[in-house]
Length: 83
Image (cartoon, rainbow, N blue to C red; front, side):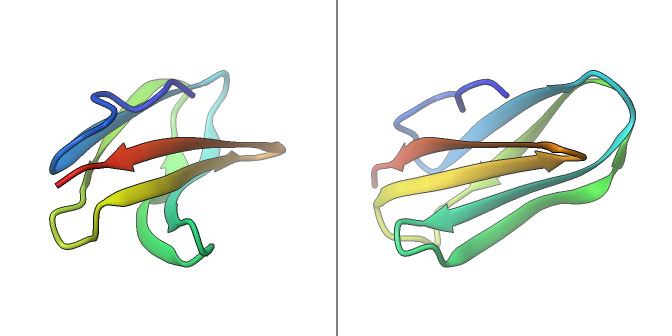
């Protein structure tokens, strides 16, 4: 999983990730309190590179975490939303 771009962002950003094999994938965004604010992906995807956009105009400025889960792989990264 790559760092989102741009970061910091306003109001949208792109998250890119690669899958070594076909997998069930989830990409979820959380606030710093651990509350889920968006589920961007929840589907079976083919191996290869993928990207998803996150639109945050309804959220407050701040730090958010995004998590990707694919089979036995989980990765969390930080992104900053500035209004």
